[in-house]
Amino acid sequence: MSSSEGIVVFCPRGNVIFSSTGEMITNKQTVRKHKVNKNVIYEEFDQMKSFTEDEFWKIQLTKFSRNNFDRNFKYIENVVYYKPKTKKYRSECFIDKENLEDSFNRLLNFFKSKGMLSNKDKKNINEILNLELEGEKQEITQWKEIVKNRNFYLLDFIQKLKNKYNLTNQKKNELESKIRFGVSCDFFNNDNIIIKNGVIEKILNLNISENGEKIEIDIENIKDKKKSDKKKILSNYTTYTVETSNDGIIVMKKKNNNIDLEKKAKKFFSQTIFKDEN
Image (cartoon, rainbow, N blue to C red; front, side):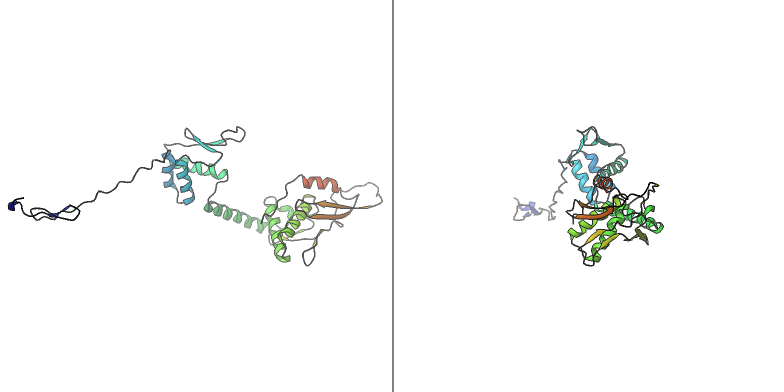
């Protein structure tokens, strides 16, 4: 290198720091471009993530974009199918790529109707349900006025009795079976279920001992709804023992000519008994 060319300064890595004219050379680093996610198969679902702030649905849409659907769901030619192999229960949701926002809203309702809910969705549903129940509570004064949500009132009453008598889960299950038996057989009805302030306050012919160990249905003084002009038959008593699904036993004594327990028991056991899984 001649003296007229000046001095060139190199760094230890071999890069030029100063040129022969004395100018400082800045080493510009190349900005790495984001790699295209090659796992995305259906971009329509990936683009739908811009329509929600719920992290749950963003995760689900990411899975959908990679053709990773939960069991019973399949995406074929712009249509999301539920149970595609079963004609009887099959349902579908069309994805319009020209209108993704509308498609996203329909897709959301589609999955929600199949039970896929985020925590935020569940919270919103509970708030709506509670508002409806509060409105209903302010209006009802009798058991016969409760048409919807009867199960809610029964579970609320059962939980209060569980707390009051400090019942174990086994005893709570026994209590629930007997209450549902009583309601199904019409032993518990508008005459003896007392409603106060929009909730069940007590059931007159449900007897619980002070320690909660003994739970009985008193059906001796239940009024018969059907009146009969037939001649009175000499009354006799029969003791009925019914074993419930929660391993509880209901023992009842009643006049044979007043209540047909056999028919009522059949009606009870033909219905579903809800268990407390806790």
